[in-house]
Image (cartoon, rainbow over all chains, first blue to last red; front, side):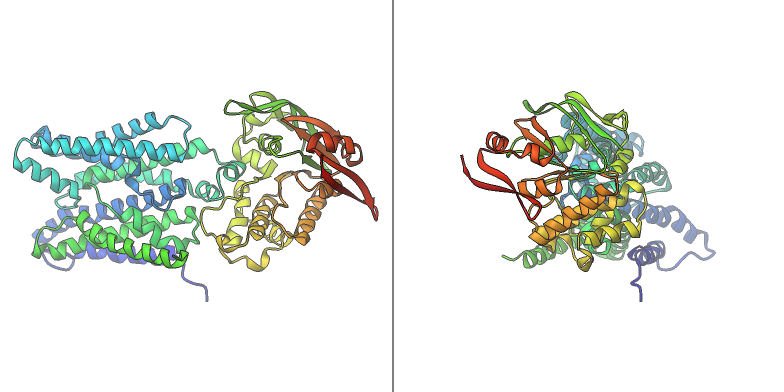
Length: 322
Length: 249
């Protein structure tokens, strides 16, 4: 018997995750009946949340897998190139400046401007033709700068409420996101995902080194630009509407790599599906646990992701010996 | 397909590694590139493969400068085995060999099976490449080049780390491809294997070609001494050429 293709069973899990996200919430279980209030909850609260959960989870998993494949480093994660830090800074500045009080969409727009600015800065700093190491260094440097400026904004926050708003936003959440957020984020995420998914063969070729990849017809500077652009679009948009959500982009490719025969190209689709499943289910968990307090989505993914990563370290140690 | 370098010069950083190299490769024969460490063998092969932009002169593939080809077109013409055996993920042997089909946009089972059979790696097709020995990995990576099925084959020290049987099998395979009309270039350190399998020997020293011709004309005692600094002689045993190194001069 042929083993079931991992794309198929992950697709099945994703369908169940979407259904769970649509059906479960503090307002009760199940899909809406005829009551208008229930329909309102469904279309205004649960539907955008499910769409954003799936898209943002997919963006995180996909970008993590693409960066790990391009940098040939299993520790790469979507925030490595400074996009997450830049988007966070942009959103925090939007809160700090009071722009969000004037109009609500200042928050995601600030995030998008921050993501674009940090990506441009990383590109400028790394230069047009540099290799992976320079790119990582530039990303770390810009992330560090964005982080420093973010804490400065927190430090100088005009009042405690603004500080709390910034901190909660930084933790990452899908609470109270509307269809407007879906319209802002989804075209950018889908465009970024399309760019990253076009790299399947190039990433496979890169796994035998730069010279072999070049011999197989890969244009090394074009693939680099595509990885940066795809990540910036997908992660910039995701962070701009949901805050920074950690661990999904790091852990999901690890978890699924064996099902892709360790080929970085095939891992892209799997990680997109897997990331979507995990973020949707984590968001369902957030809602189920809301009776015990307002948990943020980024906190839950970190709480799930960190122990998993510990387990990965122990497993790797056992495989590689002492 | 013809591949030729004219007055080729390549610099890596500030250092000039190749200078004034003119070399027209002929289909149907195995050309062995010989030279001491640092002579520029790998740089010559990488430049011929289009991986290093020349800072002087040109590399011409079928009448067009190599830089004018787009990646996949060049990849369908020239297969290149680098000296460094890099592998980043534990993919299976079969998956690795199948990468040779990327420029063709297919996964032709015939080409992949034939390449795996020629390099004798079919029996561990499902093993992760990271669990292979150095010589086994070298054969898998060579099979990737063979699966690419190109009219021009450039291999940088393909026999390094292989046991004697697989060294001979690999060079037999390349010789057969040459006989079938392909252009084959190998950089080698084993002078006897070069003398036996190369119809043409190109001797490199300090980035320049110092001799170019049939083995008997190139592997003379005088050239072996001036190029490699060894006292050696080309002898024929049972009709096969063998370079007998006596001592370091």
